[in-house]
Amino acid sequence: MTMACPGCGTIEEVRKHRLCVECRRPIAIQQLLADDSGEIRPELHPLAEYLVTHHGSAISLERWLYKSRCAVVLRELADGTLPLTADAIMTRAHAGQSVAFLLSLLIRSGVLPDFDIQAARFEHWFQRWLPTVPHPEDRLLLRRYCTWELLPSGRSLRGRPATAVRSGSTYQKVRAALKRCAALLTALTEIPRFCSAGSSGRRYTALV
Image (tube, rainbow, N blue to C red; front, side, top):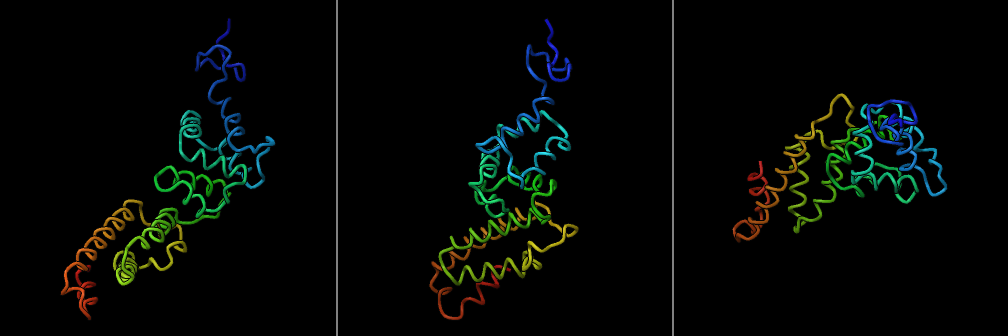
């Protein structure tokens, strides 16, 4: 009785009649990226080829394909229910390193054009978080604070070249600063003397 992989003959994984993880790799990718007809849409062919030939660890890839929340996103990209755009992917997958990893795979495989992932994730978060601030004048102050104080070059986040990217931790600090400032502005609106005419300048000074 042989315990070797029936695909390549390796005995690294001693499982009777079971393919090893390397032989399972193309099967798992096909199952994940194929549509209902069993075909992979042409736009995702580069990703399938990249995952087969370039992704280093077959074990970590298999674990990610089956257990990551982005596996659902990939399935929706595969069957066409989700548009193949960074904005759609970030909206569907929300935040986290999982979506950053997925976007990096799509960029490295050539499915998406190159862009600053961390900047795009921050911009995506900011455009959805800012409307949750109740007062229009506070939203204006926070936008200016972000643009001119926290991220002076933030006026063109997605246009930043790959050689001038900021780290994810930088954007985490910016998010935290904006949330603190939003809380401060909310507290200030409850103090009558800060709600009087001409208080915006003093409130902005408090931010910086």
